[in-house]
Length: 84
Image 1 (cartoon, rainbow, N blue to C red):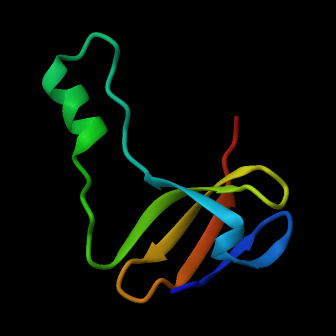
Image 2 (image 1 turned 30 degrees about the vertical axis):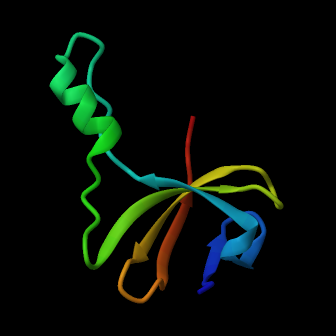
């Protein structure tokens, strides 16, 4: 099932133009133990509802953005470019 993502640079586009980078999480510090790093890499919250996700506009502007997507309906309610 496809859905639409509103790219801040290119406008509303089909999700097939993008590549998912997964949900937005906080990266552990270099000094944190292996357990926290394992959780960061392998554990996903997978909420039933809205969550922030990384998306890369592969066939458009080639920028990373963060989209708030409802996982139940796939409706994207907000997008913003990732700032350096």
